[in-house]
Length: 254
Image (tube, rainbow, N blue to C red; front, top):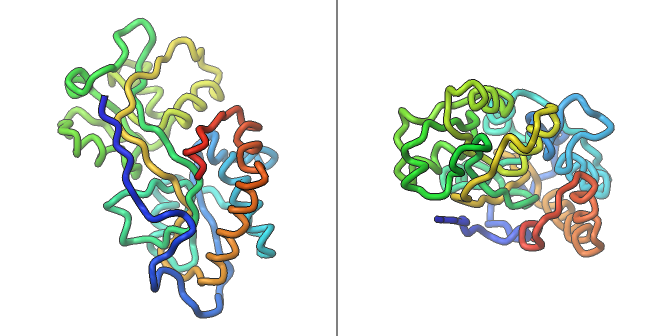
């Protein structure tokens, strides 16, 4: 098993020039896609653990923002092209590093192989490289597989987690590669029998962040980071995750 975690700056640090020192002239927007349980479209009373977390952080800073939902690829395009549009949950990768202001670390996501129960679980790289896989389009997962020597022709890109599950159920692919929490939550939330799916080896782990291309001020960044520190210290963040049935490792939140 090969697990890689990419090292980055601590969540409370920022490079010079990261955030503008000028006053904000445009209201901050935050966008996401339907990625349960982190972000759940169409459920205003239960919009996802990371949506609730970020909305509470903005409320505590005195500038409450509601997260808007779009197809994930469109949300990515908006956040990368428009100033003062932040996105969550964005996995922090070397390829994305220079293109965003990395505002807040939210969680550490674990990327795994998921296939149908009753078949051999994916337990080695040698085995996995022979399989036909599906990944979420505009996610970091294709690049991760490429770094580990997977052939592009054996990897299909899907528009949604639901599409990935359908491809697996219809036999178009042998396994899904992606975040363990997101994919298994979709299995449960869609009414599928969770016992029909199994989690195999973890290939990589990656930090997921609230990020923006440009325009977030130094004052806004400091206020958000202070609010997150307070919630982390008083246990509010862990309680929020547990309310969504997630028991996070302590190191995944820090």
